[in-house]
Length: 135
Image (tube, rainbow, N blue to C red; front, side, top):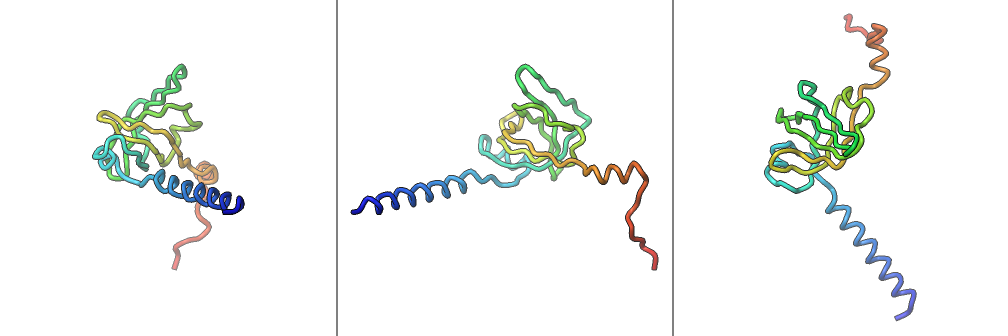
């Protein structure tokens, strides 16, 4: 076998390994209840911040603790061991990737959908949509 064939086989093997690892890492969107059924398995939960509960951040340990409500109405305490995102309290939706424990959801990633600054400017100025519903 030529050296170029061996190198080509190694490159193909690495590419196949990379593709397989990305499929195994892909998490599915579920509710907190579904994540609770498979404790320790990584899932992605989409929900909203429950502002009726305290949001605590410890800067010494960079631990953020908050309560989230998923799309089905289930709520869980969420721990996120990273700095608190800017304007966290203003987020409309939160996407949390992590795993459930017997007492909470441990998030490794938190993505926020914040209100658009343009929507907020329109609300502040009292502007409405440019179309009307007149017949």
